[in-house]
Image (cartoon, rainbow, N blue to C red; front, side, top):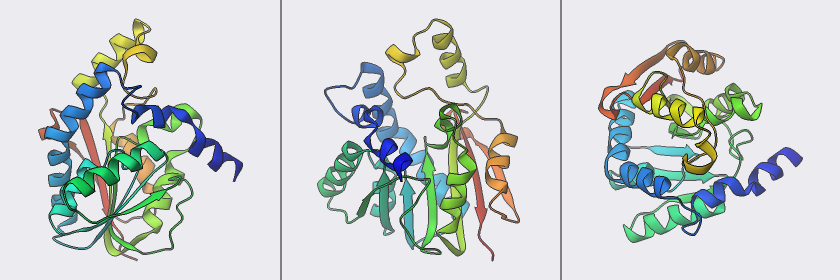
Length: 228
């Protein structure tokens, strides 16, 4: 319980969604997500899940643009984040667009949700941060898979190794500019086999890992069905 409270109280993510603390790079990144990448991710989610309706859960929802895009298409959305500021922004976005949603402040490693509740569980921009914090991302992946319904889909997006953004990141890190300019905390860029290994501990029988080409090669998608 102490670890949960430490993570929930961590100001790092709250500052990211606080307009007073946002850097130019954070604002530019948010603009790109809102106006392009959220559509890329939601299109990939629908293709991977082959779903046209149902209940969706996004742990690590951030500002909620991807979830809002799915809510517009008739899905029931539950959004969760570690940051209160992120959830406030998420709720405001849904309200502005006259959308219904549910919102939970919580930790992806200890989801406050019973088993087999959602048709789709997904996130983007989340799993790449844990290894550098000394945490095992597979634990969070298993938690996400636990709450997927039978025949539902778990979907994870991560930044890809050797993507254009990877090289920008490495240059900035080499120049010691990450803390000053990088929009997020320090992070991983993953190979396909690393994302696969992260997901295989769920016990899923078939896991697919692909580049998301429409993301300009920035992202990998991993997804699997819950068949048992």
